[in-house]
Length: 427
Image (tube, one colour):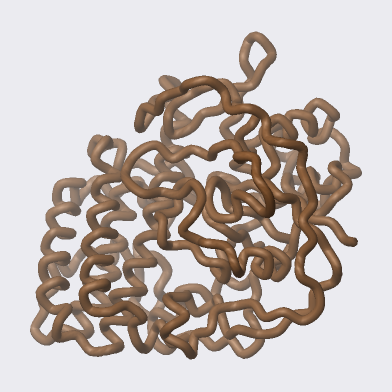
């Protein structure tokens, strides 16, 4: 992909992007104590402090160390702690034990960030194309970690019996129920999907988003909005989690083994109703809001129960190609992130924002895909096994990070991210 060889951003725009991304990460952790930022809720999650440090390690290692003559590492012991999965970079601390890294402290990590920020901003005007492309990649990489940081904090705070809120959010009156779901016919025949990595005017794209290529779509339709909590409650009340006929075999095994009976963070209340824990604390489930924190298994089972199916990646992307990825409910500043109810209107809504949408497509290489040379070639390609593609963006996705070609991916049982679904059907 061209984005790993030459930056798509003008010099001033790249400097501004770097400064803004780095500042947002630090604003997101401002409400946290050192303890909040250090501990880890589960193997899939990482401490907030680790996210701050890992993204700093990325810039220091792949830009400053490799492209700025004479640069000295801030602390040559820390790469072992904050390398994630880059085998080329050598051994690293075990992921499930990241919550044991009590030192360096949060304050020391923030000091390291300030040092790297200053060094990179000073070096930026003299960097060559390759290094500038790595700066741009690093900014988008950090935006991914900003979303992970929020969902990992949510996972952590959900374990606390006090149900602490990270930020307060005005409650207000419940949103009105959206209009009944309508079907929007999609394009059919041969269409093109994927990012055009040969054209810098196409903007940034991760390597796994290309090459752009043709696909054949049958006649189909997409739901005009996301599935709501109220609709999901209907699935629960109809015994959706108790009826194996809706579930894939692996999904049914997962439901029984884990005792799954509702989306993650839904909690039964003494009055028989459901509450949901979120970044703004524990509150009654909002019926009109899109359902979130569901696995691929759950999304697929609901679609079967509803007499529909999940869209394919190509169906979703072809439908979103002419829509504005800057629209929708996404993350603009440090503060509450929460899915919102759909507003009534014409055409497809909630395509970018609120929740990531599961598709029926496995996360695999596009025809002609080639990993980039060097360590950054490990960024996406080696994870193309056993995972499914999600499209769009969520309420925790930094605005400017989404595009129609974006390929998020998770294992089918994972649901701590803001994941939801849109229905599709054959015509």
